[in-house]
Image (spheres, rainbow, N blue to C red):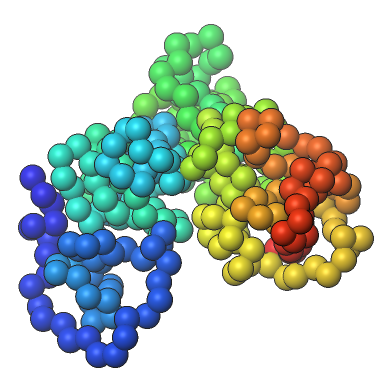
Length: 301
């Protein structure tokens, strides 16, 4: 069933003047349908009111097309929200609530958010964690969750574990969502050796801008999804490489990393195919070309 057929807004809207330029990655419109928020701004045959859903699998790719072999555009972790505009077959089309990034997600990986559903209270801050049947390390593990996953804790700590609806999680692997102030560089260091994956943004697999977005997001700073967006819209420009310090962002053509100290950078990259820490000078040499400088900008969040 096509969800949007029951979710269309039948009100008429008038447009005047040329349509504004938009970024297709974060503007919820396609040939047949658009988010109701764009009514009167961009033309579409139909407009839909988004239906909020939550990711109920450990992590899932947000894909560029409704196909398991389609390019991964981003990813959702357990407990993150997705605004659904259309359901066709086994796929939902919509956008991630935390950054408005568009794509397709398997409907089986999403659940409708109801008023009765408890809201997540904690976030996984270790590279990954497990849910166990009992509050002890020797208990049976039920599911693995990546860094960035959100979970509702239902009671008090018991023997170093916190209870949730599915079982128990190590308290040391979690932080309160309402009190997130984790050092982004410390988080990035924890992710060293995590596999590189285009579109990834969790402790399971991650790309360069996903690393930046995840680590700074868990420090309470909401950054855009892609490196060009991060370079254009966040931070204060630095003019000299000698100004660089821990936590600064360094941008290359289509790439970004976080300074681990004044000389070394942490980045998820396809050269090593994982999250790596290495000298900035070496990375700059790798990106050097005759078309322009290796480093396109340096910014401080």
